[in-house]
Length: 240
Figure 1 (cartoon, rainbow, N blue to C red):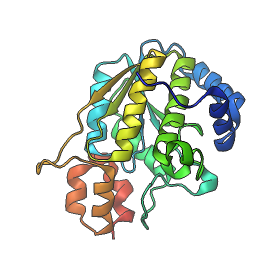
Figure 2: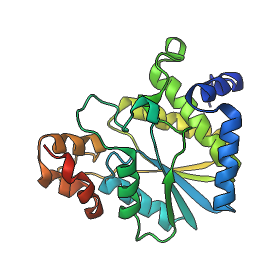
Figure 3: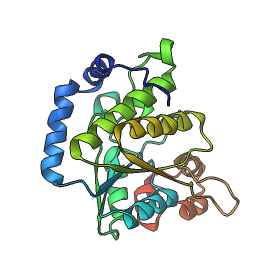
Figure 4: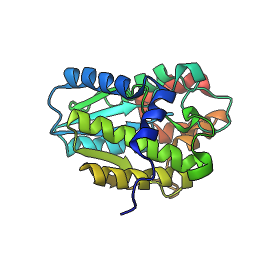
């Protein structure tokens, strides 16, 4: 198995760049641990929910059914960057509060699921410090390693030993992130289970970007097929 190319000193530097450093991360972890209690039989999944798709709900259902409790962390985005969770150039904005609320609503029937903000330490590609380690690792790899290091640090601190993710057969950068997550979870003693991504009737992989494109063109018929019914009210104001 490949060795992590990022040392602890660089990881600590990164945490300082994006938030309050290692001390801040550990303080945030203690607060979360106090709130959640024993997490030894808890699983975790991270969603952008940008917006939440029927595929995301499908993954949550699988993880919920195989776990005593499932924590769904919705990536916040850094408020000072104006991030809305998007990683492509689009005029459509899905603010974090909407993404969190739609996820909570869409998963409310899964009684052992807790949906909460990811905190400032798990970030999307939009919020990754521009140019950081890009010359040595490439931007996608740098973000993948550092974000996955933060994720594994959080899991270890909480005592979580099980995580879920959807596969990434359609997006090279997302696949880099998933492969890095596999590697670092294995090194951290976290069992990562990867579920096959849900497809449309036309055998296309369902993605949030597919829904955003449909919203941008006013194609609500497509949107309705790809998101849980509880998500639709949150998207009503975003259609062209």
